[in-house]
Length: 216
Ligand SMILES: Cc1cc2nc3c(=O)[nH]c(=O)nc-3n(C[C@H](O)[C@H](O)[C@H](O)COP(=O)(O)O)c2cc1C
Image (cartoon, rainbow, N blue to C red; front, side):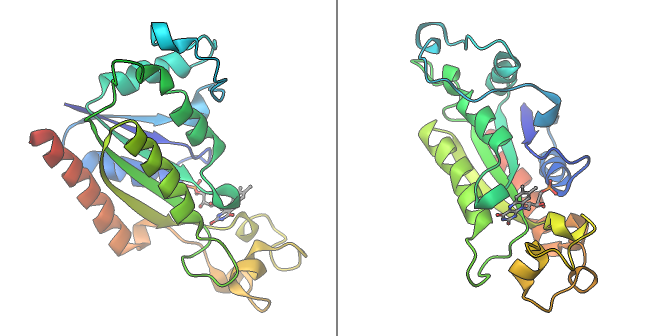
């Protein structure tokens, strides 16, 4: 049994990467971790060339990633949430799994999990629930491909304005947008996955749940 974990985060060893790796290791099975920024993958062109061949005609890494997804017994997809939606790499990856669908439904019946990192905490007044939107995007993909959705986990990440060097004085500061006009970079601090006990627990549970679905 092999579980494939995907991270759409381009940041080196990011919260999303580590969260996906934790869930993978909690499965206790053979795993492979893929960082999408190491691959070239365009969005789907909706040309339907893949209908008869179950292969995409775009010459990038899409077909390689399709082979990895088709060859895995379960998938864990990790994304992040720029502008309150699922990041474009992860979205392009999901779209490009379309060739696996036609007639064969190669992903159908496999267990799948979703992980999303976002900066805006749930219930922040005046701002969308970015994690929910991004998680829903992964979950709806899994529903539509007949993947057996094992659950979704959200990780509290960081607004880039905390590290850009201008978070305290920039008129567009995300620090102030999220935490209010008096918030400061130092006062807000950096969120690290390993400090989020409940999230660690949920990631472990996600991995275990995927393993037990594969056991059934
Ligand atoms: C261009 C850009 C836009 C962003 N917009 C949002 C947003 O609308 N809502 C949010 O919650 N986080 C937003 N973020 C923050 C990311 O979700 C956050 O940095 C997340 O921690 C990234 O995950 P990673 O650290 O695993 O890469 C944005 C980040 C970038 C770079």
